[in-house]
Image (cartoon, rainbow, N blue to C red):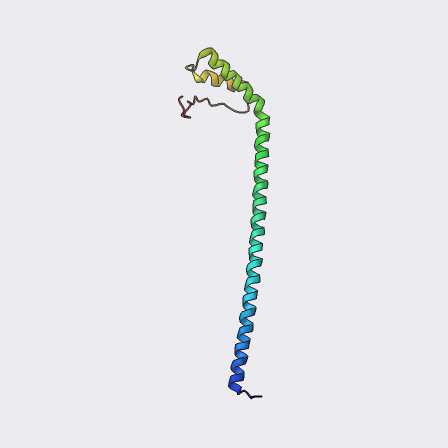
Length: 122
């Protein structure tokens, strides 16, 4: 067996340690990257569920408020339709506004005539 000099033995030892270090670093990096990816995916899922829950709550609140006033809205629509049927679309809007506001004290109506291009005429 051939004997190695101290320099060659030391160089071999440094190279072996460097290879082990590189291998360990590479495996650790891969594991860390995968765990961070999973963590980020889970955070995204949790945030999406949170946003979905908040949107559902908002939708429920809107539906509740609509249902609370839907009868009043239908009555008001019927009054407005009758008013325009009797007086035509050139009738003054202030009279209709007064009629609608007299029937409900919780809120006030603002009346606008909008054409088919969604532009306010009056």
